[in-house]
Image (cartoon, rainbow, N blue to C red; front, side, top):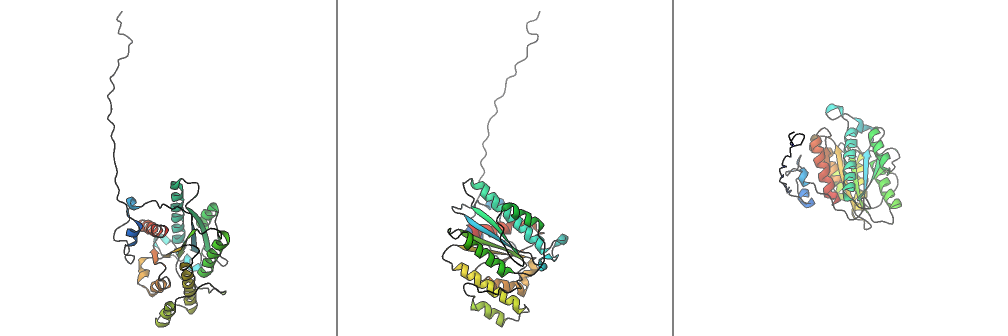
Length: 288
């Protein structure tokens, strides 16, 4: 009998060479991103994935999404029948998951960002539970008037009542068509700039007097928060509209209202790529 029968041939295993690949990415600072021309449709140096850096927050920041739920937000102004409210909710969800991702990447005992939402309704209130937050954004309906001043004051009161013993940084994120039309009856802290009142007085505007008063009130709150000594307040103001709005008198009025605070950013939810870039650009600048 042949002794080699039934034996398996032994194959020599070839040693595989291990390869190490290095990836190098150039990282832009928040200052470099801020230097982009805000008046252009897209920043001259487009924000790319490799430019997105994780914000190293050593303290908790409170983020308040002030979402306009008024009837005017229900108007279809974008491709595919999307309304202004659809744009606001889409942007809110994008920011919501963006901040959740940052919290997840931190791997710390505490989150870097605590999120809230303030629906601009007849009686604005604050939602701080993440599950309710998400459910609201998926089921929001446009109705009623634009009580932006009331919603802003609700957010400010919530900060002072709930976090009075902590000087956390605050980020107010506005998502609106920018037309407040209900004056706040009670007194407000701070003072409004005379330059804004003069702007309306000297311009040939068709904006209703009541809306002008609302914008002056918002300006008053913004300036009060800007000069606040107890904590850092930042604002982002997103307008749910196409770039055409930037050539209107209304855009100039909104820009005057936000003078020295921030700059109105127009967002078209049908341009998803642009939407993502502008969201990241704005949050990086203000949250750093």
